[in-house]
Length: 253
Image (cartoon, rainbow, N blue to C red):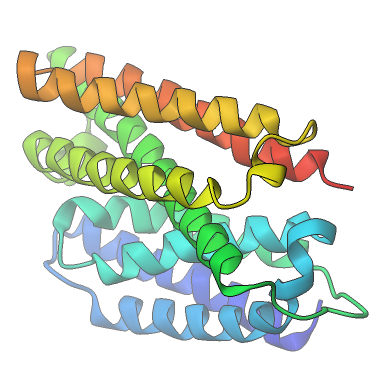
């Protein structure tokens, strides 16, 4: 591992530690932790960017790392929302663990056409939001379980109010559903890839995830779905889309 990647790992872990301490002490914002996170994101992107054109078909580790980088970036930008801070504490170390997966490519190649790059960018951003929604659903599950047990633990007492956690969950789902719709629509411009033998399972699973999230948002609007119902539907949708995208990477030559 290069010194730059090792330094980036330390910065991610340091940012998570500072943000975790701030959350535990129930402080509003931890600017030093945010600064460390931003520095780590910049160094991480500098390592990844030159490798991306050739990574889509030959270096899935780079795509995993890019997805986690995108998730970490979104959470860093959302640090003004108290409910986003526990996610950042969880995600920064996971992003650090993705750094050893970065693969050097002898010939990174050149970028594909603009339309395909837009489709791939939408796909990565959508997947990032969906995984964040899944992680937020797990946090919400732990909060509700602790509160309903009648003996809220110390950790639950340090987390943001349940209503704020649930509000963040549905913000993530709404945005992910919108971007997933755009991603599926942009993929129609490449029917040969969309319906090829190796990629048809991705198309089917992505459509299934779109239906799951659409049904969840509809149930929230019409029947007031929340709590355990929202958690279950979110986890099913997140797992379905994870299988679609990372399964398609495994299917590539």
